[in-house]
Length: 271
Image 1 (cartoon, rainbow, N blue to C red):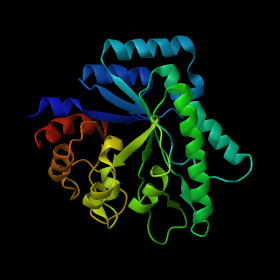
Image 2: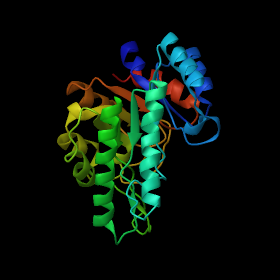
Image 3: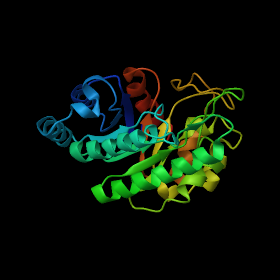
């Protein structure tokens, strides 16, 4: 087993634990990278003050844990309605402020979604919002990672943007900042015709700072399955990335905390 590779694999805690408990769980289980959402309950970003944030930063430092934040994909970054659009800007800026307060190393964001007949307007709106966000993050010393999202069924009314390679490129080719990079969700690429190799042949590897992992079925529906329950070829993914010089972190995003923890050893045995 490649222990150094395992140490680069983090866990998507999401909303499963209070942030303080997530840090304690990671420390107990030898996990050095976690990401969380700050949208609900005690983890809502409105619930963090300076003393609480200081304690969290201290716990992360003590246990050598790198913390990332993950915004809610249900918040439409491509929203153009008056007042609602301004609220989305405020939501994203609040995540940057929370990252600064908590010492989080990155914030995963999305391109939003559309309703079939308004794609160009949604994409322009989302791009402009992301450009404003990145400028704000740059001023605050934060890092934004844009994730490629999942496809929805063909006859669905709502579809995520940046789920195809061309759509993802539309955004990242127009944003050039040290505060901006990419989060590559490999299982999302497995759902579309381009596939993982199609994405890796085109995207600038130097701009990828996170690779998110889950099993699913080729050209199938959105699922976040533990490894072995779909047909995703994890050894080929790791070889393709590592042989091309990728040295960023991976994030397990499937099943239970225990599923994600044990899969770190499984993945480390594939390299």
